[in-house]
Amino acid sequence: MARSNLAQNTCNWIVALLTLWSMVSLIVIVVWATWAPLASLAQCRAAHRALIEKMEGAKVMKGKEQDVLKSALQLSSKNQTRLQEELESILESQRETNASLTKTLQLQMILKENVTALENQRLRLHSEHARLFSELAQQEALVETLWVNLTSESHHLDSCEALRAAANSQQVAAESQRKACEYKTTYLVKQIENCKVNG
Image 1 (cartoon, rainbow, N blue to C red):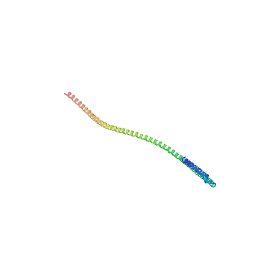
Image 2 (image 1 turned 180 degrees about the vertical axis):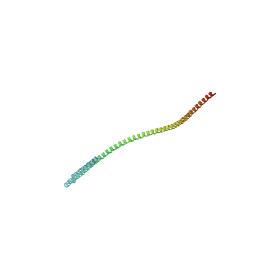
Image 3 (image 1 turned 30 degrees about the vertical axis):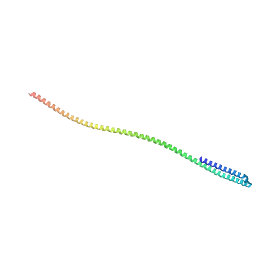
């Protein structure tokens, strides 16, 4: 659009300059032709012919210049159309780029949210792992304590079993001694009775 205005202004200036040059030339010729001391018929005719030739030349030049200006205007219009198409293509590419950038930014936000969620989950799992590890250590300590207690109780049970076996053995021995004492007592009683009868 700016190039088209520049070309139009240039054409207007050229036309204005040609018109001004033609008018100045005409005034100069008229003044020169009508100046009394130098005026003559031959000079007037010569001036008239020269003026006509200049006017024809100016017309030809003006026509050529107008053709040149028309060509320049057509070229400028073509260039403007081409530039407009290029601008539309650039704007379309920019719109596509902006759309792609928007999608990329949205995807980046989603990925950032996912990373945050994964980091929070990692922290939760780490905390859960620490808690489970602590509970496992407590359970292992409890198992160790129970094992020590079980071992101690097993030894105590073995000791009790040994004491029970010893007590059973002493009971059997005491029962044997009791029977022997009863037998001996019975025997002595019989001897005493025999002694009483014989005495």
